[in-house]
Length: 189
Image (cartoon, rainbow, N blue to C red):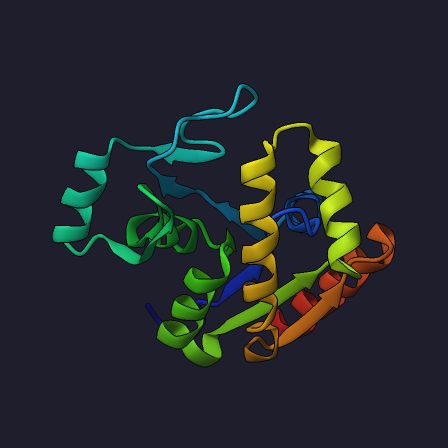
């Protein structure tokens, strides 16, 4: 990695609107490229391998861990690993663009620690846990158990918000997207 290679890290508790903001940033800023994370979970019906995630078997994922192929990785939920491949970041830098990493909070903290000042880290928050709960319910993908797990985790993850370079409260999506764009363009200039 050289001095001109920068990294954008966006994180949030599940349901905060992070993925929508990331999509807006990618659609409107051609200098950014989505960093496809690797994971061991099964794809959702709308997801494509190599586009949304690299869906790896647990065996293949742990082999990559042993070979030090990840910039960061974590068991986000029991038995479900997620990680950022070093080769993915390099692929984007080699294309002359800046990787935008959409990642869980603990992984974001590790990436920020590793890349330091060449990384801009943004934490996206829902305005409240009640709003977050409704967003998760509106998805229609949560069981009572998974909803409770995600809300508990959201409370814990929000306690780390102050460790990030910027905090964006996603109360109004248009405003949150504009704020994220402004921060990123300032960082890249």
